Image 1: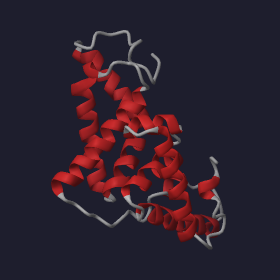
Image 2: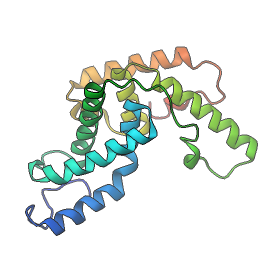
Image 3: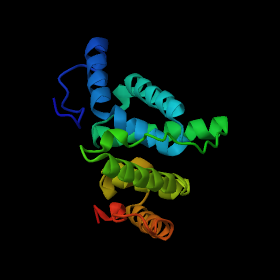
Image 4: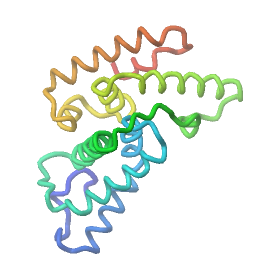
Length: 192
């Protein structure tokens, strides 16, 4: 089964068992990215987990609405963005905390000093990214943390491609001004 297109799925969307299996596979492949995207909005681990669960419930309930003319990940991330924004708008949450060990699972096997230095650096970069306004934060998260293409970001956020490029450029400028003296401060240049 192709992992990004539902149009070629070998099951009837009305078959609950096969639909459930597809959603399970979708969760296995994309739950971390959905969680990270939700976290970029709410900045709280528990709330991001709740939103991620809600996203997959919505996907299950509305799978029959997916037309297959875009990638399934674009559809999934669009639901995530909308769910997170709805949550913030309806609940009026403005949460400023973040989990300290957010990038622990991303570190490689290195000396304890290198691990601590890189963890501190990543936490500082994450905190700086999370301090951006939503319109800049969401493009940075999708582009650098989720490795989405600019065209896909435009589709996910329902924006013009040039708007995405402009926001990404402005966000980089803001971040460069805020991130000045970290060793290896080229983290946000890796995909340029």
